[in-house]
Image (cartoon, rainbow, N blue to C red):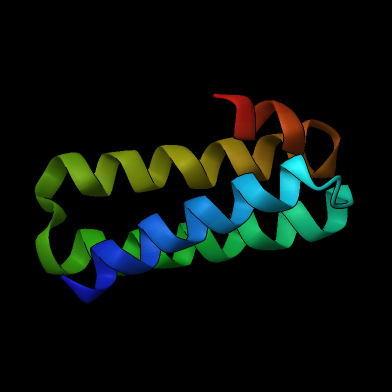
Length: 75
C-alpha cells in the first residue's frame, strides 16, 4: 500500500508543479521518479496489468524526453 500512496503523492506533486509553471527539466525528473515508483508498485501489487502500464510509461518517457513533458502530464 505504501507504493500506491507514493505513486498518488507523486502525481499530485507533478500536477502542482505543472500548475505552478515548473520547468520541463523539473517535470521530467518528477516523471522519471514516477516511473520508478510505479515499477515498485507493480512489483508488489500491480500484477501483469501494472507491469504493462509501467512499461508503457517508461517507453513514452524515453521516446519523448523533455520535449513533450507537459503533454504527458495532460494525458
